Length: 214
Image 1 (cartoon, helix red, strand yellow):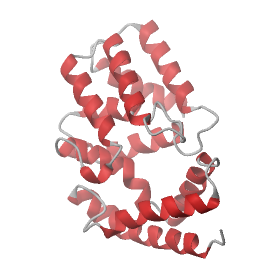
Image 2 (tube, helix red, strand yellow):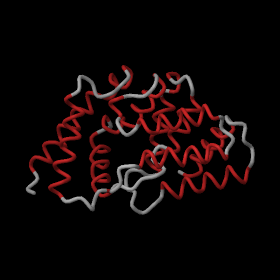
Image 3 (cartoon, helix red, strand yellow):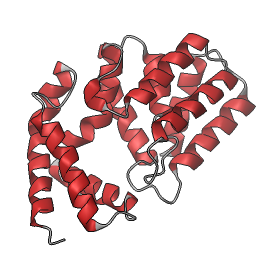
Image 4 (cartoon, helix red, strand yellow):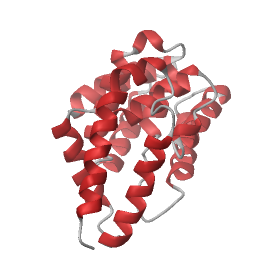
């Protein structure tokens, strides 16, 4: 997995015109270390890989691939489930490390804005590229049933510090908010490809949560 990610990293960094092997290599190693922290079950290198796979499937829809690529690399770089400022911390690190990599101030600003937008996917981003990215990050909701159930298990494990009762309340509210909206995804292409399965998956999870004796 890391070799495939490393190849992607090199491709993306070359978009910035950075060929400093030491900086590029150290930054990648630090990224991998962050996504490999022991508290992560879903928000891991596997999630990062799946996100890039999804984005590449829809590459023809993306006008600014550099912005989207670096938003993907950094969007979950800071992840502590008991905190509510992970997006801000991730954006802060992206700003610093992209500066070290030679990214323009405009690119850094756009990447930061997109990372911050992941705090509320349904609100959308600044443009269509942002919405494609946000939808790709949310595509797990419309994954095959077995993949979705593993996702649910992994996210629950990340929130092991939360009681079953509080998890049931918070997770149910989150899911109901998603399904109450006229559509689940921001873009037509994702709504068409993933929404039907997403609604089935969410209905299953809500049934499981309601049946839980807590």
